[in-house]
Image 1: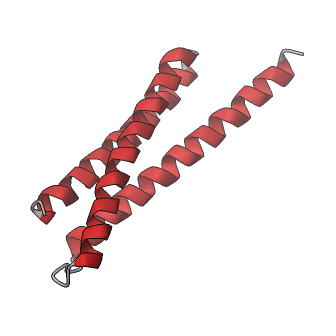
Image 2: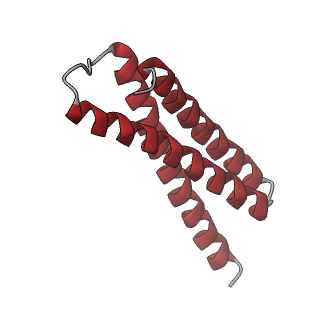
Length: 107
C-alpha cells in the first residue's frame, strides 16, 4: 500500500480542485460563458472521481488489513471529499434551475 498520508493528501487535493472548479463554473455561467462553465463542471466531476477512486482503494485495503487506523487526517480527507460532492451536486442543481427560469423568461 502506498503511504497513507500521501493518499489522503491526494484525496484532499482532488476535493479542493473539485470545489474550486465548481466556483469557477458558477462565475463563468454568470458571465454567460456556458461552454466553459460546463467544461469546468466536467473538470470538477473528474477531480471528484479521482478522490473517490483513492478513497475506495483505501476502503478495500482496510478490509484486508488490520493495520488501518482512523486518524484526524483521514477524517479530514473524507470530510473534504464529501463537501466537494455536496458542492458539485448543489451547483449542478442551481444551474439547472437558472437554465429553466431563463427558458421561461424567453417565452
